[in-house]
Amino acid sequence: REVYAVSIVGPFPIAVTNLLDLTRLDLHNNKLTGPIPPQIGRLRRLRMLNLRWNKLQDVLPPEIGELKKLTYLSLSFNNFKGEIPKELANLPELRYLYLQENRFTGRIPPELGTLQNLRHMDVGNNHLVGTIRELIRIEGCFPVLRNLYLNNNYLTGGVPAQLANVTNLEILYLSYNKMSGVIPTALADIPKLTYLYLDHNQFSGRIPNAFYKHPFLKELYIEGNGFRPGVDPIGAHKVLELSDTDFLV
Image (cartoon, rainbow, N blue to C red; front, side, top):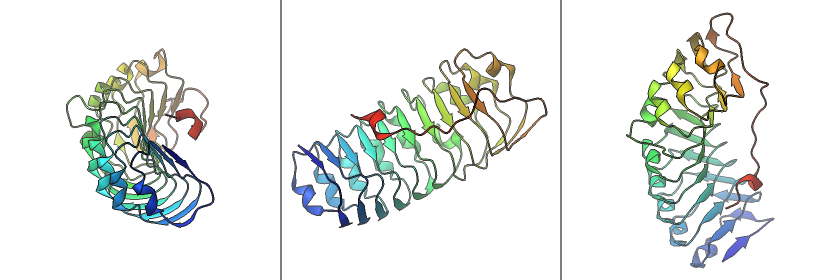
């Protein structure tokens, strides 16, 4: 039911896709190269797929969208390119999506907002474009999302007030993009917002007072913007780096 391997060098081992009863496939921290083969879609019982820290490349096969039982998908720290496939929105059980530190381009598919169980999405450190407004355009989107990492991309536009409708957000990481405009007061209505990283963008204006009275907000990081003088950060900034063990399914 489970394959865990270390010291694999070379292409993705296609023979693994014959193990139709597999529920966990963990090949992280190896030297896998080349693409993920489309045969991955055969592993219909897979709940966890961890391929982080390899040298995998090329575009993601849309067949990943056939892994209907997947709850955990980590493809971070590879060389994947092309667009994030909207077929990931076909994974109804998905809770954790790690795509950071790759070379993904294009826009983040707003269809991901239809995932009813998605709690954590990290697409940081890629070459993604677009706006948050496009990402959250589907009504009732991201109903249980807690952690949203969009940092170190090329996102533009402002922070829309409608982002407050993603009511379960706790971490919002927007650092190092090309976003602009003022920060809407509505964002302070997100009840459990705890970490808000706005640094190294082109934001301006004032930080609304509501943020400074927010009961949960521990860190508000704002440097490298055009905020008016007298706008203060909250808390001591430290990079949040979550380890694999935090999210074992």
